[in-house]
Length: 295
Image (cartoon, rainbow, N blue to C red; front, side, top):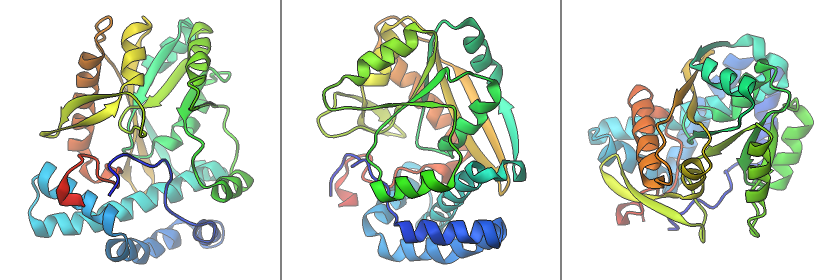
């Protein structure tokens, strides 16, 4: 089994069409009900990801075997909810949810100062809805998300046709590394640039650190840039708390000049803290720790 993330999420256009039909015609409760069966399907027919998330609960969270198995099912269920919520929120149903802003003033202050800044998140919670939180800041497109364009083209095209476009800009990661110049340009203009710090691609430079009791690899880019560019760094997460309530967290990172490992350690302490509050919302469904137990 490959140990690095491949850049694509599972799913088909038909699956998205079914859920969007349920959302728009039968409502969110009916869509969530459908998830009971979808989550069960993934438990039985998604061997690699099920083994990986089981390993997280059993070995890293130290759950019992029975609790770990049940948590795998609940993890798939909550993950499905976040996908449904993302589509619902971006399709005009934002007012069906409530939101809590914890530390949002840190983001607002950076935007007002226009001095530039870096935000680092992780594949926990529902960070993709953060764009709709940021839209409320009247940011005038001063926030860019660094992302890949590796989603299946037909799924991406379909979702763009049925959801509203955010004011958030995107900086696409490119093989020729030209995205580095786009990032630097955005920061020089006083914009905020957001990364996820927990996934890397084959060939990328990485840093090794201990996370939840075992060493593994992380993308070096966000931490090298955050420690060298002399701009503020925030850790930002958007977590699902109840079926219709989300909580945004923004925390200021302590950054030592040109000390990327120290920034990575601070980031991992932050992710550990958020996962203790929301253990089911760890959504890295692959062999994250590069262990033979997941193969």
